Amino acid sequence: MGKQFTSSGAPPMLASLGQQLASALPVLHWAPQYQKQWLRLDFVSGLTLAAYAIPVSLAYASLAGLPGEAGLYGCVLGGVAYFAFGTSRKMAVGPTSGISILVGASLGGMVSGDTGRQVQLAMATAVLVAVIGALGVAALVAS
Image 1: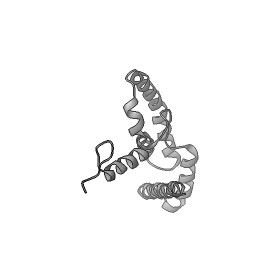
Image 2 (image 1 turned 135 degrees about the horizontal axis):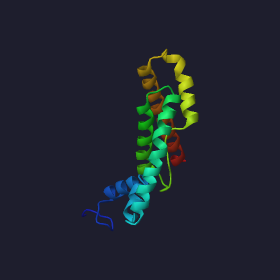
Image 3 (image 1 turned 120 degrees about the vertical axis):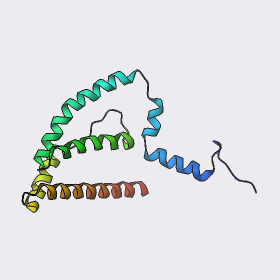
């Protein structure tokens, strides 16, 4: 018996992997359909968002008792992650005042003014929340 291939010419295992990757990364669906005429308006939107998000991210980091760059990383990395995994073209993601105050108040008593320790605990909290979120999404997909 010869090798079997899908209608696209790919072996079934590779085709299945490609389908799984495409479903996990919505950017693979919408990016090929992106139109050049959107670029100018998207650039202006990006500049407008940056003018708002940079000072807000610095302020939220301050509320959490973290250095300003932590807020900038939260804003930028959240946007990059949403770019790959998000399903809407019109979305802004980043730190919020509520989360910043909660992190600052929760971790403030544990660090005794040690900013480095507070950054480490905030990062550990973020990773823990991401794992819990991923497990929740996996449970939803499995059901």
